[in-house]
Amino acid sequence: MQIVSPLERSAITSSDRVLFEIQRAIVEGDIAAGCKISEPELARRFNVSRAPLREALARLERCHLIERIPNAGARVVTLSLEGLISLYQIREELEGLACRLAAEQMPDNEIDELRQLLDKHLETQRVREGESYYQEAGDLDFHYRIILGSKNQYLINMLCDELYYLVRMYRVQMGMNGPRVSRAFDEHKAIINAIANRDGELADLLMRRHIGASRKNIELRLQTEKETS
Amino acid sequence: MQIVSPLERSAITSSDRVLFEIQRAIVEGDIAAGCKISEPELARRFNVSRAPLREALARLERCHLIERIPNAGARVVTLSLEGLISLYQIREELEGLACRLAAEQMPDNEIDELRQLLDKHLETQRVREGESYYQEAGDLDFHYRIILGSKNQYLINMLCDELYYLVRMYRVQMGMNGPRVSRAFDEHKAIINAIANRDGELADLLMRRHIGASRKNIELRLQTEKETS
DNA sequence: CCAAACTAAATTGTCGACAATCTAAAATCG
DNA sequence: CGATTTTAGATTGTCGACAATTTAGTTTGG
Image 1 (cartoon, rainbow over the protein chains, first blue to last red):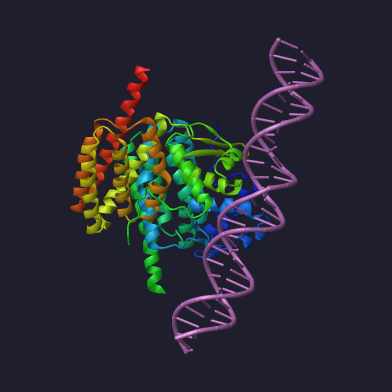
Image 2 (cartoon, each protein chain N blue to C red; image 1 turned 180 degrees about the horizontal axis):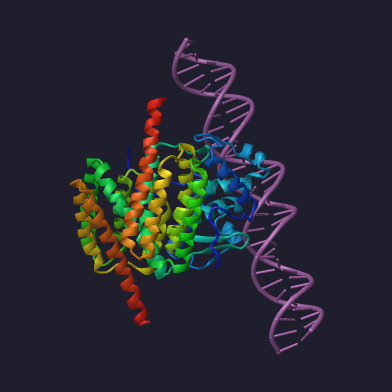
């Protein structure tokens, strides 16, 4: 059984296709945060009828990218410091748990693969110092694999399907890059080492710190942006 | 602002109505676990077209009550010991977090109301010793209010909207009752005391233990059922 | 001039029918 | 006789149109 990389999915139905396109558009800001969503407009834009579009909207609501009010329509969510903190509080708990479980459940070969992935990312980072996109994708991939390693069906579903698009949206639109990128590598290394040693408690702790540091990094960024504006 | 009891909701659209009815039917076992779901049949049964029914199915999938496969249809989830453990592992983390946050965020009047609720439940339990339904509803109400007290939007959404119907389903269909009912009251009391004292760390710990004990209770029950059958 | 009531346009929710896909039973071939 | 292919039935996905509701603009009354 091959592990399907989480960032590439296959669209079966036309509802899937529309979902993926709108998801990407919202995450990357092509459809602005807080923007009202018009069903007829989007249906025309993506060449589908309203039925599959509404199915897609239901799934967008599920991953917290839009908010719907019955008989009134949908809006893209607005990003806020408060929301960011709420989101990362949950991530700390759930991904900490994921690490603890992965330390018990993750097979050796998956751990090896993850190590190789980290090495590969290190090279890419050296080459593309400063550019943050690849690091972000790599970071997400790292987190994804540990979550999958937990073998907890609900955990996987909640984090990978319901929460991570919003995480990406915060990262892309609020900008997570700069000097923290290199430090994140060391933290990833320490986490995978703890998992390889089957030390779930340590892996849990390290992941909580890692996510906490990431949160503080974005908070700081928001703070300085406010001051300079 | 009045706190709307989570167990009573108002159906705005006909899709809502169908959702609530099917939700109840699945949770209480009227539609059996593992059962295949036929869209035309359910549409006839609830006197709606397939459009609102499919909207309802999408939301049922969201709260993990059914599983859908594109072009192949939906099934009611099957309950398993493995699934139960996965579910409760997540509850321990998230409700522990909810307690910690509630200790910081919950206003005094909400804490008082929750205390009064516990006293009321105590009376009901004395009167109806042995019958577990009221305790269950009360227990859920208790957990609900603490989650709401956390004031974390995502936490509230994930627990109250996405996970708790499944929790109820496990409880109803696997039967959570017996001598643990009375002990749960004491645990609830201790938790609300910790929150009232603004001791988030303790409240967190106590909630994790409370949920862990609840899980072990059900596990034990499943074990003995297996042996006697 | 402001507020409330009404009206019209647009949007969302729902319906019935058609197209695409899957499932299972019947037929064919080795 | 068993395995594969074919075919018929049923189910899911999608479409366009209609009904119900909301929103914005206009009119009316104080």
